[in-house]
Length: 391
Image 1 (cartoon, rainbow, N blue to C red):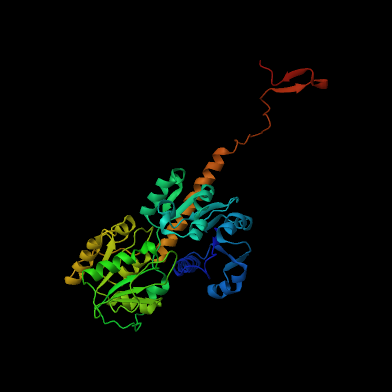
Image 2 (cartoon, rainbow, N blue to C red):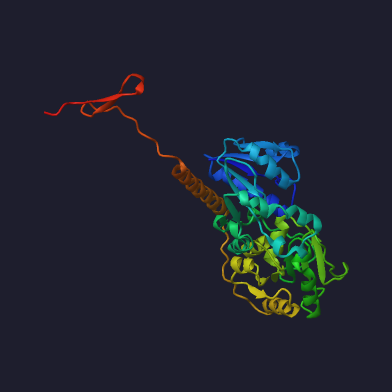
């Protein structure tokens, strides 16, 4: 199978997006060497991607248009000659003879536009419109598949949840204390991009009002500002530690050593920190939203708009042991195998439909000596029949 990948964000973009592209491509190259993979990246990143890949089996082709949505819709179709499938993110090529499979991370912006700034909404605007050209719409959870189906019913028959998982570098990292001034089991941890959707203001208010956090038992917030900002406390409040970005080794240490991991997001289509925390054995207090219920059904859940509910859930874990049910965490090999098999099923179905749509071939043969034949007379105006005479 020849696959053209949308690898636009492999070098630049949100850290989680870069990691998804990296893990997906590396795993596919390793697990399915018989497939031919072609990565489409911005022209300025071609040499960098070749260095990152380090695998001569990966073909890298340049994209010259921007932004990402325009490049995918207009340019990737022109690069898809001879490939079996185009696998893109969020946007779909408008023209291509290949099967078009688009991974849509979520349609949250349609349902909750207040969580996004003007430029973010502008980027997302054409995404559901272009999805009408996709034969497959892939997404990370059954919860998000349900939302896509509800908001865009015409896509319902094409939507398939295929999952995502923890990036391989995090899975393989060895935990190392990041030196952010906290002791093992003496802090609450929150991880994620810092924006209005992550609901950090309510989390901070809830934990401070109920004295859940103290200078010697702080809330540690890992992540960098992104999108619409939060107010937050004064940066010198010793009960709250904003530590910015942390590398994989340091992040794994924080997950392993926290008393409780809390994720108060108002909405998510997936939730990578939930799987990272589960892999690291952290006790979890999570927003009661569909994606988190799906990913970690054994966590303690709270109503994310209710500060008292947040404080109760976090406090309950701090006060005593909580027996979380194990969270199944797929390997990237499992995710890639499911994506690949979903694509192969769609290609087989497409081939079957093409055969049905083709007119049946007409078989021509010579008559046997025993069969009568019609001979046209001169000018085709008269005909005579000849054949074996009956006796």
